[in-house]
Length: 215
Image (tube, one colour):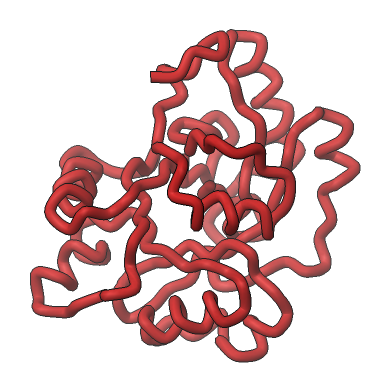
């Protein structure tokens, strides 16, 4: 649900390296059905990973991770119309406007790593900001430091929020560290949005998904 390839300015992993590493994880008994590439401040309309996905029997979807004045937000179901309304490169955009625009265009935007010190949604709420449209946050983040996922847990509990899991991978071996277990089968980017709106999912750690066993 949260990964970066070399298309992002701070990642060294290619999409092919990710999908090949997932084959290693599968051989170890882990269940990984797909990944979402959430490149920073952009959406790669021109990139097609369907052949690679078919070759390795893995779903490869695309999303975005955008900078806002209230932290980073993951966007799923991105359309041309949404990118025309919202400047994805604007690091000072209002996250509330982003969330509303996303829903108007059948997409969804939600806070990434809300417990991250200094830039997480938790800090902005502590400063008195309110976010009525937030119902889901990234509860588990594979790139978080000690204490940050715990802060995300506290936020979910105190505000009755649902949580997803994402690896926030920038290196090949980090892919799928945290994942999201959906009740529904997800096959497309619009299907991913529907699955999130269904609220039938939970965040999981890779280590807990072995041989099809779900915690």
